[in-house]
Image (cartoon, rainbow, N blue to C red; front, side):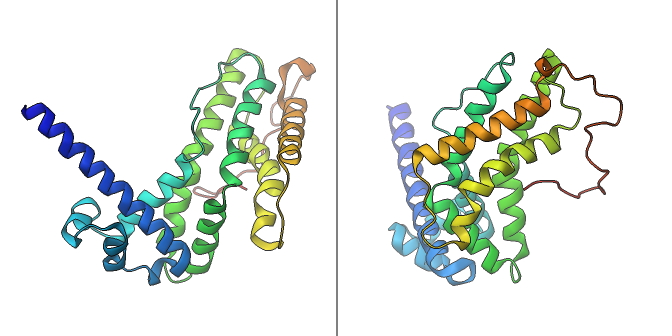
Length: 230
């Protein structure tokens, strides 16, 4: 009986947490980071302030949960491609990234962060470290696995991942922030992914028969902490 009661309370807490994050997402998008009060979040989520603060002691922790949810939203299939077919694996990650960055919520999140970061630089750090980097590191690890398997020659996985995801993001995502009505069709998005895959395979695929000399194909040196991300 105790186990059943405990499971019920755990499920109730999860539902309340989800309601809080959903309410916070809507308020952050509509009113910005500064304009989204925790009192209003509690009201819209239909929970008490005590419940909200138990789950999220600060607005920063709540924003981190919002960012995490947005970056996890398109990860319905978390299958990790096995090394051995560079094009196939890149296509899996490319489609996943395109789906993620095509979501209206992701566009809204970026717009809010860009608008608020002069006053709240920590939210840009959260978006980058909690949101983008975990996905980016997955692609890096995959490229390293292909390199170790001998199916790719990738001396700089940071630059390779940045170039690959950048090609997709520069067509699928970034114009949405500035070009009114930019809304590529599914076929156009798929073509953008295929082009990025073909370019990356041509550059790094071991079957291309290149014999890279030391230093060739490496990115310029970067200062510690400097990012090459798109």
